Image (cartoon, rainbow, N blue to C red; front, side, top):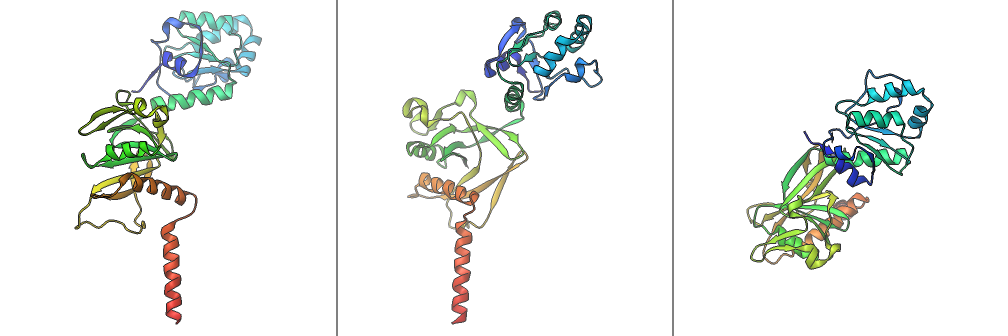
Length: 310
């Protein structure tokens, strides 16, 4: 099971440790869902999701402060479950004394943030979803071309890394070379990033491994991007038919998302970087409503009709 330590949550989200700092690396989060324990403060614990981050905002803290001390102590004790990772208080609101005591007894950290509750909840959810999402590793090179994440795939030795290097020299950005870790962010989005050990590195046969960030600057790399298009490089063969009009739509299923795919033949003399750059721009034009293939078909049909009338 994927899990995130409370220490990682603190570092990634600018949270302030109010108490329980020694337990940050011992407490783990296993779900991206956030709990707002409003009903629990009234004593309703039938469906208390103790394994979630317990986020308390103005409503919860205000209600807690109006409770009788004995009742507040009892509720706080019940909220400190065996699997409760941490309490998070928004807007730097004051922490009830009974919560602090109960959290200390059960070794649960209390964290604070200056952010409003809704913004903080969204920020924590986005972070946890990205960290806890199921991941898989794909063979290929991921490049940002005009803001589009393009995954370049193909057999080993077909020239993926060399093409990526040419694209970097043309002003585009490298995300990952050789191995691309992907996860599904939502129903329509697949995110790709490099494994930590391979960040900013590119392998060129005959040269070796180069550090793209050191050679070309920080503007030549990105840590992650949405994958919008897959470009598959395939060695040209006279016996194989390749799409010439762009009407043969293909896609690759990654988790629950279908990513558009095009296949480009590799042949001596072809500038693959320029071709892939043009493919990315053409894909963007399609997403904006202009399809050159359909425009050609309309023109062809119009010409046929004109000639048939003569």
